[in-house]
Length: 423
Image 1 (tube, helix red, strand yellow):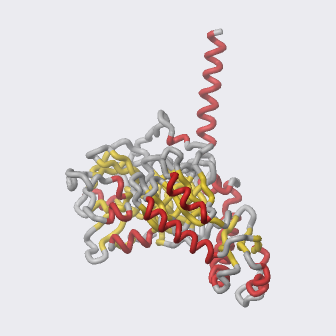
Image 2: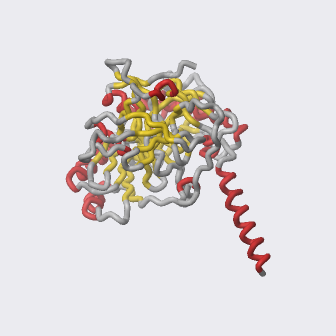
Image 3: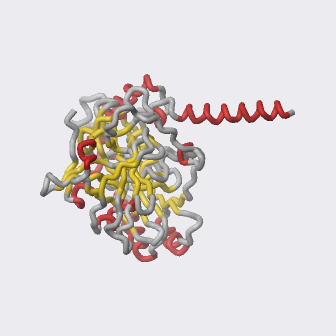
């Protein structure tokens, strides 16, 4: 009997480690699209074509804003879907000079919809007014293009009933976030097993770890930036909530770097005191006088990949298409990817404070980010699977949805510029 239980436990242990290994056998983007690695470039080309078509469609349907309810792409189905309220206007779009002499129409599907862009925008604005009035806690509000409706994600643990009831007149969809497939690195007891590198100089890559040495808060390296007016000032951009600047201990915090493959802490510098930490949730760690400035790179860590262990961050770009991919590199969950779900969103925190313009990304029912990933770079792949365009920094998770702060807000409000790759 004892041997039986020993064998049973051995098999269980093997199953657990086998399951964990399966999580990391594919490229992160292949995991998202549920394809094999050798199919990635084909699907990547499909997505690029769909985004191109979507960029052409968006201004066309805005000329008939009462007749259409927005667009979204689906890479697996190889289609750009156009929510259509008035089908009689469809020929105007299909006969446009931008589309009629191309094969783009083979990749466009017009689907019946109830809500136009005007209706959605008007309802969203009115719900935002209710958010400011009732100050609900921990909600996410956005326009979901696939549902052709406004979605309000909320926690059952928070008493937001007065706010939720007040929004029913606008017929939103209410969702209580959940996760069916948790990320194994987020689970208590599953830790990283570092492999010490032989070289003594540890480069600092986007997605690696940061620690606030005052309160032991873990976050992630975002990207390297310089001051707009003084190029000698160098910063690491990360999430603002990694700091406790709002306390009486302001100015006493030091941050350290933690590589994925080394347990050693390397002291970097202090976070610059700024009201942007509260208003936009990003912070700047001043590394100008740090000996580790020479170790700072524009690369993004992707160690779990068999072929692309380091990603080249070439430039900053903006997200334009619902349904396109967004990937992030972070201290805990490493590189994971999701679909763009919400643009121009409204998010409230545990105090009921509202934050605009965060972007939501998700792989439905899957947890793709963990505590400790905050501040890590969020990016989209460019012309291949080695080079990426930065689109923001990761800020947190609510159920199966994750959120990031767009790059253009960080650069403009922080008065900084992105240090670009020299590769």
